[in-house]
Structures are given as structure tokens and as C-alpha cells.
Amino acid sequence: MTTERTFPGADVPRIPPVSAGSVPPVAPPIAPPAAQPAGPAGHLPPPAGTIVAPVPAGRQIITVRRARVSLTRIDPWSVMKLAFVLSLSLAVVGMVALSVLWWVLNSSGVFDQLNNTLVTITGTETLRVQDVISLQRVVTVGGLLGLIDVVLLTALSTLAAFLFNLSTGVVGGVDVVLTESD
Image 1 (cartoon, rainbow, N blue to C red):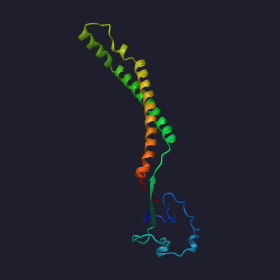
Image 2 (spheres, helix red, strand yellow):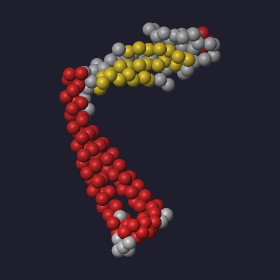
Image 3 (cartoon, one colour):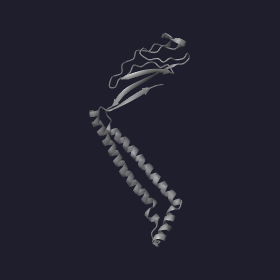
Image 4 (cartoon, rainbow, N blue to C red):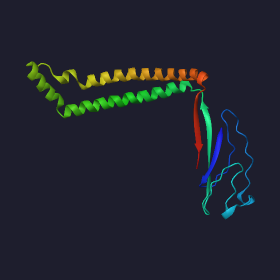
């Protein structure tokens, strides 16, 4: 289903509407502007079949086209590639964020305060927080979690694409309205 409305704006030649799943018709050649009859105030007349709102003299006309299409299939291979790249970038961002957080906590003295609290509570000075939560351990654990994240998100996204393709046979897909305007 295609609907057209005309709004004030720039003159736009009318292109025949294309329905979902059909081959677009070939538009007839557009005559040069001098060969077309001029409307009021030197504007071209609107194409047949459009609804024209009252336009004050001196304003141009713009045509807005809408097309309703259905999304019925998603390529699982492209979903897998996109999910892999996005989850990999998410893992890199997570590792950088963990490293910056550790550096901020270390430089602000949070770990030293925790060490003083542990000495006060336990009475032993052999246990240090920096030994347990070192930058190397934080990066290693962050890298392992990032790797698991990449594998799981890639697999789940690909599975979701397969399930979407299976369910469109029952439901018919997702309806989308596309609007073209200048």
C-alpha cells in the first residue's frame, strides 16, 4: 500500500510507487521544464493523483512518498559477522574501562586504605589488596570475560536470526513504513 501527500517545499518529479516484492515500473521520460505547462506563479502543476494542500503564492511544493514493506528474512551470515564485530569492540571497551578504573582506584589511594583497614581488622600485614587485585589479574579476567562475551553474543545473535526466519513463515514478518522526502 502506497500513499502520497504533497507539502510545501521543493519541486520534485513524481516517481511511480513501488509495492513490496514487485519490479519497479519504468517511468516515462520527463519533458524539459520549458515544455511543461506552467501553473500559478510559474510552478509546475502537481502530478495526477496527488493531494495538494493550499500553498501560498511564492512557495514551492514538495512531495512525500510512503511505502509499506515487510521484512521477512534476515541473512544469518551477515548477522553473525556484525554481532562478532560489535561484541569484539564491546570486549575491547570493557577491558580499557577496567584498566582505567583500576588505575584511578590505585592512584587515588583506595587500595592503600583497604590495606590499612585489613591490618586493623586482622592484625596481619602479610595480606595486601594489590597482590590479589593486580592490574595483570584484572586485565586477564577482563580478557577471559570478553572472550566468553564475544562467543556467546555471536552465537545468540545468529540463533536469533535463524529463529526470526523460521517465525516469519507463521507471522509474516515485520511491517515497516518507509518515507521519502526532500
